[in-house]
Image (cartoon, rainbow, N blue to C red; front, side, top):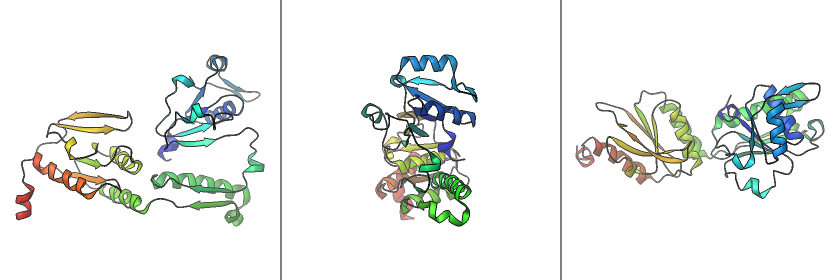
Length: 276
């Protein structure tokens, strides 16, 4: 299951369809968080849980809208009267995975054909999993022989972005001590590279070589907390292998500067190496 589908599903608006969706998703084992700005609904839901008559009750966390922190990852379901609400939209980032939900939606009537197009910098594995689930559902509903009439997939991933992801995926199979990811903190494709590295080994997301202040201190971006932080004793002594990657739009000179700085921190002159 891809990373997005492993994250809590945030449902904004718990009147009617929002509550039912939350109940159904929680019953299937998904992690769900409900968000609303109505004190009465919040108090009642926290006290009694979310009940679907005849089917039972699910205890689901409910957060007041003013206290809600929109997630960096995972799906946000915007239910009736919230998907076009300026106060709601102003809280969301451009990269948020939004799903508008309208009352009166009948999948038997309205879900006759589905197209899946992914964000250009999205991890391919994530969008392929979403694609696979929709494809399987439409094949089950309409039959494999009529799948082309009811399902389309559009590959909109940037080629350079995918090349970087593929190269890093291969590099991460090799033994390394740490990984340095170079690029802008607001870059989605660079952030995905850092996420890939974090799963395997110590990874430092930096915007330029100046962030490597010394062999004992590096300043880097924590994209989960949205803060720049320092790590000490980050560069191990002795013989080590360091991996370096960068976002698709990162200038080559920033990558070169990073390599030079690493050698400098070990007291090695790049010019002498080039001369040899």
